[in-house]
Image (cartoon, rainbow, N blue to C red; front, side, top):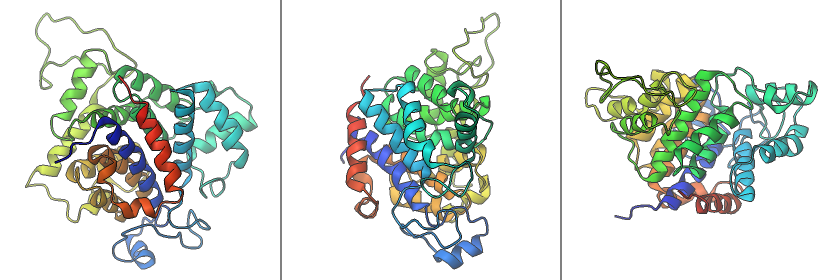
Length: 359
């Protein structure tokens, strides 16, 4: 059985994110599942047009939402600069993106502008504040949706992964818990790109990175979350995050996915178990569960993410990156590539970013 290379996993993560985003364009934000089924059938199996009056009305099946477009902007900055350059990223947002917004939700590239981007636009464009003062308190996954590119680029460099993701997140979202959970997702994705499995041992590997100071989470426990030994000095704080709990979630989700006594059937009901809303504390457990359960089945992972309703676009985007990193580019069904608008260009930039993944 072919084991994907780091570069194949990196490209798979990026293309998986783009596919997850585009799959959500039509059936995005249905909190009434009966309405979702009436509009899109009992099982959504591919790209769909948004219905009139919905969030992305006017766009067509296979196109990217605003999250996908910002992810593309981030990747283009990364690849053209040879790495993360905050000034270049901010310039692109100022010159290429913000001029197309007016501060209202139902406007802008991709048909809808999310909360954190609207807040950053108001501070940056209307109030003319520096980027260092543009972050708001949205508790959503918008930063994860673009910084997953940083996780891929620096998958072999966990310290730089954490620093760049934290810095880029703070441009639009400054809540410490949101930043910590965003960095944690990136660290998880980075390990998957390296070739680690999404299993019950994953959190232990993340904790070891924290204990060694390579991830900025404070850890005082020993072994398998055991108490510190008497007289043992507290380790020097490696970074800004007071708790490593965001690193523990994936292995709990992996344990749930394989426990015969815990069954979420059909798997799309993960959205009901962990919640349909947009906040990181709803989205991440669901994405982690699907990524662990369908670790070698990209199609099942993203389609169950989509068919759960609510903020299914983010759920599918984050799940698509996690599973794409595990299957590699070759594990993504060709029909999802063929139906994605500008797929040749998106494949090219995914491959270019993947070629820059170095230790």
